[in-house]
Image 1 (cartoon, rainbow over the protein chains, first blue to last red):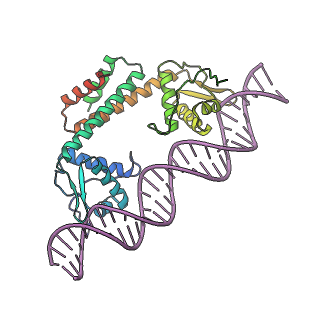
Image 2 (tube, each protein chain N blue to C red):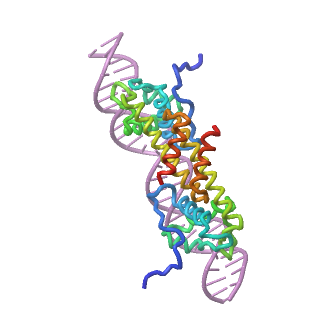
Image 3 (tube, each protein chain N blue to C red):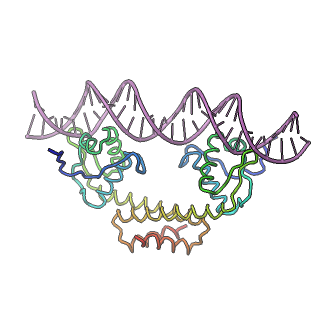
Length: 132
Length: 132
DNA sequence: TCACTGTTTATATCGTGTATAAACAGTAAA
DNA sequence: TTTACTGTTTATACACGATATAAACAGTGA
């Protein structure tokens, strides 16, 4: 009899990957929410269940959830569980847009420091974005 | 009598700023080299001199120099000092270009996860890059 | 020899992330 | 009320990286 899990929600995380364990959890959940697989009102896994699934400590999950609550994407209710907030989708998207803007700015700065002129930076951006 | 320093080379760094102290040193020096203020063959400050200027430990400077040498941007000679390598400028620019590409890719991914379509991502990139 | 380089070693401190464990507290259904 | 879930809090601990201090070592050139 293999462990049956209704759904893993988010795949495995690893201490070796980029970012700390709790940051990886935050990122995965933000993506689930921004891309609509977790809708406002949906119940997130309990601390203990997610910790067991991801093979991490309860503290690590708690910290990830705290971060998401701080951003207004989820909310927690003692005795009930943790849920995607009504504005969760919008806030998650907005957070990602802000991150994207910040990364674009940093990329442009690096390119400028490499000696590229404005037109060349725009061209580089085009290339990279479309090469996907 | 105030301390006279021929030139600070790079401004103050801080544990509070983004990245570790040694990473900040690496970044500043890379920029000095990629932007041509430090040319191939130029002598970098000694471990002890830079540590004193930046109010950090010798180990921190050593680590930064090791990182730059690993990237082929500078080289060290016991008894002589540390110097910008002949290909230092090119390698520094190339490193920055690679960083820029990586950041553009990450930015595009975040924007996509926020629900933006390709055309919208390109438009966002344009806006942000030109708003400088 | 002297005065500067970089090199190495050893020890220590600090903060962060993570883990373990236990107890506490709120909710809802049997 | 009991049971079985939730989240909450507390205390202790460990690992690791970054940083610091200090001292000695080793190469170079005036």
